[in-house]
Image 1 (cartoon, rainbow, N blue to C red):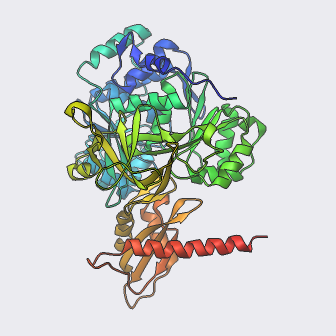
Image 2: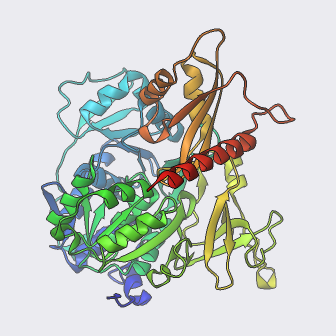
Image 3: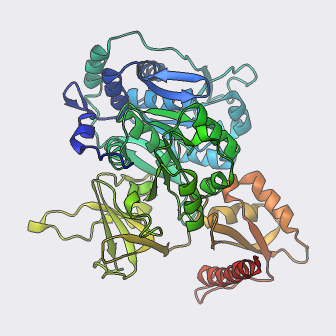
Amino acid sequence: MRKKALDSDVIHSAFLINGTKMHNIMQLVQAATDRAPETEALVVDRARLTYRTLAALSRGFGEQLRTLDPTIGERIAIFLDKRVETVVSMLGAVAAGCVFVPVNPVLKPRQVMHVLEDCGARCLVTSAVRAELLGAQALANVPHIILVDDPAGIPSPLSRATTCHRWSGRSSPGHTPCERSTELISASAACIDTDLAAILYTSGSTGLPKGVMLSHRNLLEGAWSVAHYLHHTSTDRILSALPLSFDAGLNQLTSAWAVNATAVLVNYLTPQDVITACEREQITALTGVPPLWMRLARATWSEGARRHLRYFANTGGRLPLSVLQTLRALFPQAEPYLMYGLTEAFRSTYLDPEEVDRRPDSIGKAVPNARILVVREDGSPCAIEEVGELVHVGACVTLGYWNDAARTRLRYRPSPEVKPGGAPCDTAVWSGDLVRRDADGFLYFVARNDAQIKSSGYRISPEEIEEVVHASGLVAEAVAVGVPDDRLGESIVLLVAPIPPAALDPDALRGWCAQHLPPYMVPHRVILREALPRNPNGKFDRTALRAELSVATGSRNAASREALP
């Protein structure tokens, strides 16, 4: 049965603390603590934290950070799997007036070092094993490292400029919720909601990952928007299967805290890990990316794991219709939400479950408090069914790219809307995605309009893959392109010209990539060519290669379907 839509005023009231508007997500947790201090806020394996405990631990870690004498806005990087310390570190950084930078735990040392250097992290929160894996070179410019486990086996300091600290794990002194709420409001007086709160690193169409800057307002408005259209309530138990370094994964926490729901973190290796968590924790809400949903659709689900699911949601790429149909049969009582978003603006659109049967290939309409435009290259609005670029306007438009004004100017531009009275235009995110809008106002994804690859829910820079491939010393030329794939969104195809006259083993090259790239960036196929095509400007002709490979892939898929009994 369809859950009654929540009144937006009810959810917005969650963003007041003692009648005062809150300015950051630490205050979001504190407001939840004031409402229901003993409600379960966070579950990780056997650890179960109430809102009171989560707030106290976070304040305590904020106090530990303050002993390092950080300045307002300093970056605190967090390189951990999903655990209590990961969440507490993010909230504690906010409590200390710092900016948190969650680093995807699957990244290799090369990518982590780039993030640390690019954001200028003053402190890294990690484990002893991860610190040892990164090594002194990657950590050379990080003055402080806080280890969440026993640092006995790690050299201290790792370098002359680095000091290791033990995670204190202490709660701050006890206070009643109202007393602490008042202190938080007073302590955050210098903080306004448009200040920088977090940096999320995401790949673009060129080069190494770039940091997207999120304000406190972005985090709070994103929490409200998603909690509203997914109808979150305090009875929900939300399984966090997505990385917390991913905008949708981080939002699962904040949209839970907005209504005193429970967030359950899971580090999964197999679909069974997710299913077991759903049964054990009586999960009501589950969001995934297409590759995860494809694995879950083929898995065996117990009745107990399925019984409580209220909705399932997809993000990070199109969910094939056959998989969607399987999931709907598997979870007949759960509502399906098909979503589209980009890190630069959190969620942009969602398809109302009541429309899924009529238009299962649509990405829906704008999320609450956002406006989605479809425009031509000159910024003029597209006609019905005309393909144009998706432009997002609203409170969740982020602040731009960290320390990269040039890229920010390309992606963050004035909205093409004309405001009455000559009022200044809002800043909008020009997504780089091509979409069309039907006569009823529903949007449909068409394609990317740049070289970026979208695979397994990640946006991937082809140049980052190519740089690693060249570092192998095995190739003279290399081009990575994305090819449409029903399972992954796009599969990564690497075309290379070996250094003559040496023979090249494609498996050996993939092995090199697996050593130096995170799993989602490893090419799925390697093709050898004597030379790679170029356009009249002398650049690699990625468009021609993508078209050629797409046709070939389509022919193979068609042949496979015809061969089926």
